[in-house]
Length: 252
Image (cartoon, rainbow, N blue to C red):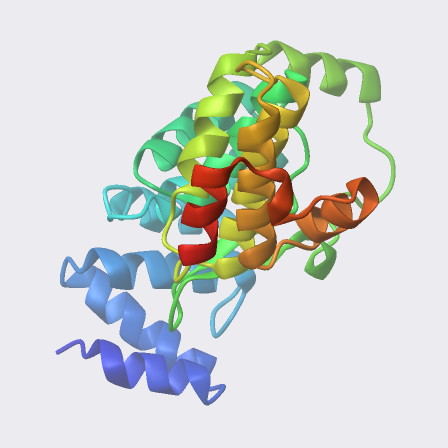
């Protein structure tokens, strides 16, 4: 019988083969989280042979898990053509599902994709739940080994899969900024900074100096290095807010 805690301990201790075997057992018993974890082992070749095609089938079984991480990983498989044919439109579709399920990585990705009108290469290329939610950053896994065979066609497909939409970009940045800070803190801080920038740049909303200052200070408190740099560069401080909002800020 599958026991998640034992499988997680095995994984944390570096016994990936045992952990993967147990996650597979849980998946066969119908446990969606075990299926997600086994899919991740397959995707990263941890305890089992690297097999992104098989990984997708296990992520697909777990696609309705709360949080949207499974659909985010499927979106990444389609974005890079791992185990499936590269398909930017399908990647976009799964990214939308993931963002709607609450995945902050997908929300930030869509915010930036709607800003640029392009299915770009993200900072985060995968999400683990072993033993807890962990985003995997691009510099850990080189995505492009050599030149893309047909760069111009690839670029055309990236831009044709999604259209620029400043309002939708604003809405996803806003949603990402409102996550609890206990949820991948650096990403929440990034969301708060990008949300503040919308009011600085008038992206998808009207320029609002007061709100941009308040949100930028909130982003700094959340740990955003970008917000800190912006505040220093522009000489921003709480005294620049009007009285009522300054009092509210100080109490917070």
